[in-house]
Length: 199
Ligand SMILES: Cc1cc2nc3c(=O)[nH]c(=O)nc-3n(C[C@H](O)[C@H](O)[C@H](O)COP(=O)(O)O)c2cc1C
Image 1: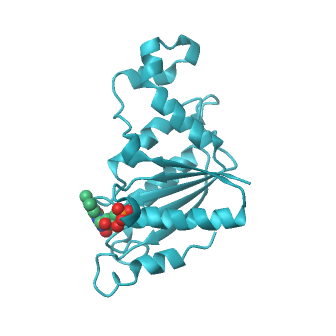
Image 2 (image 1 turned 120 degrees about the vertical axis):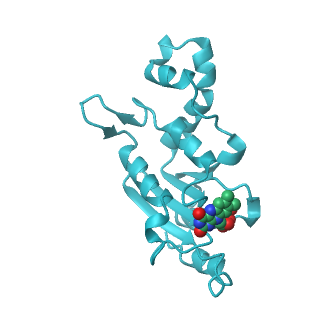
């Protein structure tokens, strides 16, 4: 039995390739770990605010020193961090936008990368605090980025690998639905991506 967190970033609902790919990963995980609990965080609906003048100050304070206003601003961050800490497996759907992740997903990242919670500089060098977890990336794109001339231009995957490594998670597997805008590939892109999943 595992706690699975499925984080999505497409506004396209059931039509979304990244959500369908993430769902396939979750379904196979449920088959492998019957009785697992799944929490879905739709970052488009969650609508995380851009970090404002309160966050950098409040992020540094222990909870008992935070003002009621700071506590209120941090509620969505605290919830997002707790979801990540509770999860054994995190499945992240990425709709590739402008060669990167959607800003909704980046806003979520800005709410979970927290000193003293998900990483620490206490020993003088960065230490990830999210240990023993696994991440699956489910990336959807119209172009092909797994190989070929466009490979260097998917900036979402290397960044997500880096930032989750920074928080202590290095066991990361990527699946893709790609080429969905390319004649000759688009006809089978979704099916091929879904079929490629083996957890
Ligand atoms: C605003 C926007 C930007 C996009 N930028 C890219 C891009 O840089 N590269 C690419 O291959 N596809 C790009 N696409 C196509 C999407 O990656 C593709 O539609 C993908 O399936 C989106 O994920 P979803 O199906 O989960 O919504 C873009 C689409 C939109 C709406």
